[in-house]
Image (tube, rainbow, N blue to C red; front, side, top):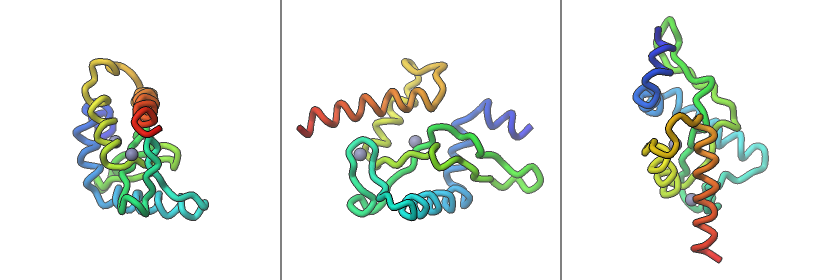
Length: 130
Ligand SMILES: [Zn+2]
Ligand SMILES: [Zn+2]
C-alpha cells in the first residue's frame, strides 16, 4: 500500500522524504563519499564548488531505493550514488522550474527529463560565460 501511494502521488511523498532525517544523513554521506573519492563536488551546470558555494543541493535523477520501512514507516534512503546530482541552488531551481512545469516533459522518466534540461542549462551557461 505504502509503495503504491509513493509511486502514484510521487512528488508529495518525496517532499516529505526530503524533510526526513534519513535524507539528511544520506546527503552528508554523499558529499563525504564524493570527497573520499578525491572529487570536490561542484554544480554540474556552472562548476561552482561546494567550498565556494558553502552548500550544494543534490538533485534526484530517480528515487529508486527510497521508500518507507513497512514496519515503522520511517524513510529508507538507499539511492545509488550516481542517482544524486550536485547542483548550486540557482541551477537546481531552474531545473525544477522546467521539470515541474510538466508540459514538455509530461510522461518522460525523471532521469531522462533531467538530463535533457541540464544539457540545455549548460549550453545557456556557456553562452553567458565565454
Ligand atoms: Zn550552478
Ligand atoms: Zn531536484
